Length: 566
View 1 (tube, rainbow, N blue to C red):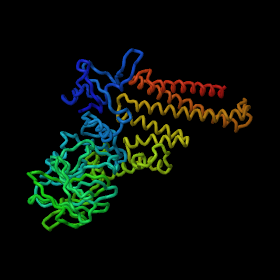
View 2 (cartoon, rainbow, N blue to C red):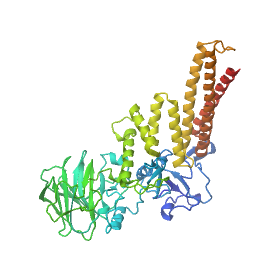
View 3 (cartoon, one colour):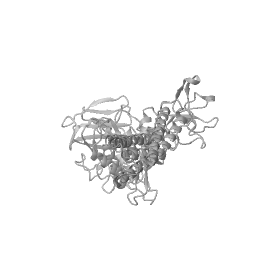
């Protein structure tokens, strides 16, 4: 299924049941391929006797396809990996203009050279036919090992983001299709890390099928992969998942163990060691039949894959075996781990100001900053964390420092704003709350310029904070007047009172202008929500009530100003 703009597609009334039109005929014509779904979510309209009402977000020509979004307006602002991860649960691989190859407007960092420009991350490559890993392997099999792409590639799930990498309970299948070989005697190692469970370590062929989500099978569970499982003493291969008992020297793989994997194409033998100890009981025969094979593993928990001669801790079964990556190759000298595929998101991308091109080292630095921010701000980074818990002040300060110094337009920062608003609200820091809502509004408009509820909620949020701030300020002034009933006599008795009067007048004038600005923001939010959902929708009526409250508050401020000036 291909869904336009992260949307589920339905056709016009002339062919309303053909839900696979895009999958059959590709993207709509250029005149129809505009950002975002063409209609808002389904809304009941009982007053007009209709069961459902579709509200158009933008003009739609007769005969054009009508599209709705499977993702809510907040999730539409997430960067491409997150959106695709969510859509994969519905078996979607989106090919809309926001998801195909190109830059990701929802994921960008500041340029370290000019400090002014923005570097947008690459969107993940399109997944065609479930065998992209094999296609990549065939493209580079006769070329030097590339330096500008991740050697380690997620296979199941192929859609992979920070949440997937951090969740050690996910049974991940990952491999190095760019390093596929079809001859020789080759060796590599895997170091088992924390949380390791159900490991199946070995090789996959270039015919091994990728999947966008977890499907319950991994290395050794089909005819195109082979895997050893020292935790359960098994060898896995074949579509029928035949289990053949294996005996390892120590008997049970655990955290810290180093598993050696040796492949002999000529003899058709697979061998495995445990902490440098080889055993005849851990050998297995296979038929290559012209296949290209590459290192691949399935497991829960952390791991390190050692491919380069400089990284290996032990040795192969005999001297005629060589490391999977030769000594003269400069790539992947160190270990590869779960976050390896994420570190190359910015490689080859350029600053939009100075033109600096990001290399592998700079991309790794940028993605490390993303990881630090995510660990601080996202409750999913710490499974035991309470998402409603107010952030500590030092965490907020670090988040603001990271966001202001390194991040440009980024959905990670946008997601953190909800928790920042809770923190600033607990401190009654109205200026910071307004700043956060402004940033949320501008981010929504930048990454998704079509009619969007998230943009409207940012505008409405500004108005809400300004009203709270104004109410608090008027309460302070009213308390002062109540305690000093004769204070406003003319002429003032003391010069100090005259200065106080001027200060109060400045505060009221500030409230007046700030409230007028907030009303303009709320009006724009109301117009957007009415366009998308109709006047009777709860979201629209809530903003309408907010507008009435703001206008009443403005009248109160104006009356106090007039009384002060008389």
